[in-house]
View 1 (tube, one colour):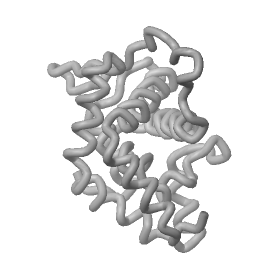
View 2: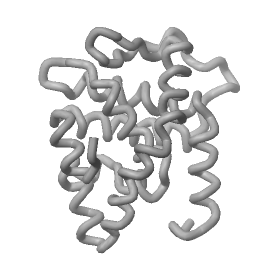
View 3: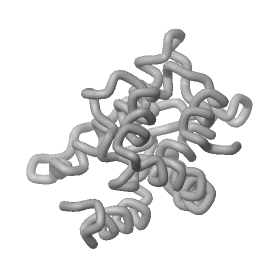
View 4: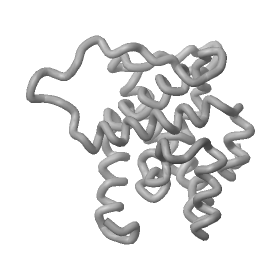
Amino acid sequence: MSIDSPGFLVEEVRSWNTPLYGAYLLWNFTSAYCRAHPSADAPSGLLHFIALPILANPQLNESVSNRRANLQSYVQGFEDKKRIDILLSLHGRVLSKRANTLAAIDAAVHAGLLSWDSGTGKLYPHPLKRSPAKGKSVRASVVKDGKKAGVLGQWFAEHNVPTIAAYLKIVL
Protein backbone atom coordinates (compact mmCIF):
# COMPACT_ATOMS: atom_id res chain seq x y z
CA MET A 1 0.00 0.00 0.00
CA SER A 2 1.56 3.30 -1.02
CA ILE A 3 1.58 6.28 1.31
CA ASP A 4 -0.63 8.22 -1.09
CA SER A 5 -3.24 5.47 -1.33
CA PRO A 6 -6.69 5.88 0.24
CA GLY A 7 -5.90 2.87 2.46
CA PHE A 8 -3.63 5.00 4.62
CA LEU A 9 -6.43 7.51 5.16
CA VAL A 10 -8.83 4.70 6.06
CA GLU A 11 -6.33 3.32 8.61
CA GLU A 12 -5.89 6.73 10.22
CA VAL A 13 -9.65 7.31 10.43
CA ARG A 14 -10.11 3.86 11.99
CA SER A 15 -7.40 4.61 14.52
CA TRP A 16 -8.82 7.96 15.56
CA ASN A 17 -12.46 6.89 15.64
CA THR A 18 -11.84 3.98 17.99
CA PRO A 19 -10.81 5.15 21.47
CA LEU A 20 -10.34 1.54 22.61
CA TYR A 21 -7.83 0.99 19.84
CA GLY A 22 -5.97 4.10 21.03
CA ALA A 23 -6.25 2.84 24.62
CA TYR A 24 -4.58 -0.43 23.62
CA LEU A 25 -1.76 1.44 21.86
CA LEU A 26 -1.24 3.75 24.83
CA TRP A 27 -1.21 0.80 27.24
CA ASN A 28 1.53 -0.87 25.17
CA PHE A 29 3.43 2.42 24.96
CA THR A 30 3.21 2.99 28.72
CA SER A 31 4.10 -0.58 29.65
CA ALA A 32 7.20 -0.56 27.43
CA TYR A 33 8.20 2.88 28.68
CA CYS A 34 8.14 1.68 32.30
CA ARG A 35 10.12 -1.48 31.46
CA ALA A 36 12.77 0.49 29.56
CA HIS A 37 13.09 3.50 31.88
CA PRO A 38 16.29 3.37 33.96
CA SER A 39 14.34 3.81 37.21
CA ALA A 40 11.16 2.06 35.99
CA ASP A 41 9.34 5.39 36.19
CA ALA A 42 6.03 5.99 34.41
CA PRO A 43 5.72 8.45 31.53
CA SER A 44 4.23 11.88 31.87
CA GLY A 45 0.71 12.07 30.49
CA LEU A 46 2.03 14.69 28.08
CA LEU A 47 4.05 12.05 26.22
CA HIS A 48 0.85 10.18 25.35
CA PHE A 49 -0.34 13.25 23.45
CA ILE A 50 2.80 12.95 21.31
CA ALA A 51 2.86 9.16 21.01
CA LEU A 52 -0.69 8.54 19.82
CA PRO A 53 -0.50 10.92 16.81
CA ILE A 54 2.66 9.05 15.73
CA LEU A 55 1.10 5.64 16.24
CA ALA A 56 -2.24 6.45 14.60
CA ASN A 57 -0.75 7.90 11.43
CA PRO A 58 0.56 5.34 8.93
CA GLN A 59 3.13 7.74 7.47
CA LEU A 60 4.62 8.44 10.90
CA ASN A 61 4.40 4.94 12.34
CA GLU A 62 5.76 3.01 9.37
CA SER A 63 9.34 3.80 10.50
CA VAL A 64 8.75 2.75 14.11
CA SER A 65 10.47 -0.62 14.43
CA ASN A 66 13.16 -2.53 16.28
CA ARG A 67 15.39 -2.07 13.23
CA ARG A 68 15.98 1.49 14.40
CA ALA A 69 18.15 1.95 17.45
CA ASN A 70 16.45 4.95 19.01
CA LEU A 71 14.43 8.11 18.58
CA GLN A 72 17.33 9.93 16.93
CA SER A 73 17.52 7.20 14.27
CA TYR A 74 13.76 7.50 13.69
CA VAL A 75 14.07 11.25 13.06
CA GLN A 76 17.17 10.75 10.91
CA GLY A 77 15.19 8.37 8.71
CA PHE A 78 12.83 11.19 7.71
CA GLU A 79 15.75 13.49 6.98
CA ASP A 80 17.59 10.85 4.94
CA LYS A 81 14.54 10.07 2.82
CA LYS A 82 13.85 13.79 2.32
CA ARG A 83 10.45 13.37 4.00
CA ILE A 84 11.00 15.86 6.81
CA ASP A 85 7.67 17.49 5.91
CA ILE A 86 5.91 14.39 7.27
CA LEU A 87 7.77 14.72 10.57
CA LEU A 88 7.03 18.44 10.71
CA SER A 89 3.32 17.67 10.35
CA LEU A 90 3.45 15.96 13.75
CA HIS A 91 3.16 19.25 15.66
CA GLY A 92 -0.17 20.04 13.99
CA ARG A 93 -1.39 16.49 14.59
CA VAL A 94 -0.54 16.71 18.28
CA LEU A 95 -2.61 19.89 18.54
CA SER A 96 -5.55 18.76 16.43
CA LYS A 97 -5.84 15.30 18.00
CA ARG A 98 -5.81 16.31 21.68
CA ALA A 99 -9.48 15.41 22.19
CA ASN A 100 -8.99 12.04 20.52
CA THR A 101 -5.93 11.28 22.64
CA LEU A 102 -7.80 12.28 25.78
CA ALA A 103 -10.67 9.97 24.76
CA ALA A 104 -8.19 7.11 24.34
CA ILE A 105 -6.63 7.83 27.75
CA ASP A 106 -10.11 7.95 29.28
CA ALA A 107 -10.99 4.62 27.64
CA ALA A 108 -7.75 3.07 28.93
CA VAL A 109 -8.41 4.30 32.47
CA HIS A 110 -12.03 3.14 32.34
CA ALA A 111 -10.96 -0.29 31.02
CA GLY A 112 -8.41 -0.64 33.83
CA LEU A 113 -5.41 -0.58 31.49
CA LEU A 114 -3.94 2.65 32.86
CA SER A 115 -4.28 4.81 35.93
CA TRP A 116 -3.60 8.53 36.05
CA ASP A 117 -1.76 9.98 39.04
CA SER A 118 -3.22 13.48 39.29
CA GLY A 119 -0.41 14.59 41.59
CA THR A 120 2.41 13.84 39.18
CA GLY A 121 0.56 13.79 35.86
CA LYS A 122 1.95 10.34 35.08
CA LEU A 123 0.12 7.38 33.62
CA TYR A 124 0.80 3.94 35.08
CA PRO A 125 0.08 0.66 33.27
CA HIS A 126 -1.82 -2.22 34.85
CA PRO A 127 -1.30 -5.87 33.91
CA LEU A 128 -4.00 -7.44 31.79
CA LYS A 129 -6.47 -9.29 33.98
CA ARG A 130 -7.25 -11.95 31.41
CA SER A 131 -6.43 -12.95 27.87
CA PRO A 132 -9.01 -12.69 25.09
CA ALA A 133 -11.48 -15.59 25.01
CA LYS A 134 -10.91 -18.36 22.50
CA GLY A 135 -12.01 -17.23 19.06
CA LYS A 136 -11.86 -13.56 20.08
CA SER A 137 -8.13 -12.98 19.72
CA VAL A 138 -6.74 -9.63 18.68
CA ARG A 139 -6.18 -9.16 14.94
CA ALA A 140 -2.60 -9.48 13.72
CA SER A 141 -2.55 -5.86 12.52
CA VAL A 142 -3.55 -4.64 15.97
CA VAL A 143 -0.85 -6.77 17.63
CA LYS A 144 1.69 -5.34 15.15
CA ASP A 145 0.62 -1.79 16.03
CA GLY A 146 0.86 -2.66 19.72
CA LYS A 147 4.45 -3.78 19.21
CA LYS A 148 5.21 -0.49 17.46
CA ALA A 149 3.73 1.34 20.44
CA GLY A 150 6.09 -0.65 22.67
CA VAL A 151 9.10 0.31 20.54
CA LEU A 152 8.10 3.98 20.73
CA GLY A 153 7.72 3.67 24.50
CA GLN A 154 11.25 2.26 24.75
CA TRP A 155 12.63 5.12 22.67
CA PHE A 156 10.81 7.75 24.73
CA ALA A 157 12.08 6.20 27.99
CA GLU A 158 15.62 7.21 27.03
CA HIS A 159 14.82 10.94 27.11
CA ASN A 160 13.00 13.65 29.03
CA VAL A 161 10.02 15.54 27.62
CA PRO A 162 11.93 18.62 26.33
CA THR A 163 14.45 16.41 24.50
CA ILE A 164 11.69 14.35 22.86
CA ALA A 165 9.92 17.54 21.80
CA ALA A 166 13.16 18.93 20.33
CA TYR A 167 13.91 15.76 18.36
CA LEU A 168 10.37 15.60 16.98
CA LYS A 169 10.21 19.36 16.30
CA ILE A 170 7.21 19.89 18.55
CA VAL A 171 6.62 23.13 20.44
CA LEU A 172 5.07 22.44 23.85
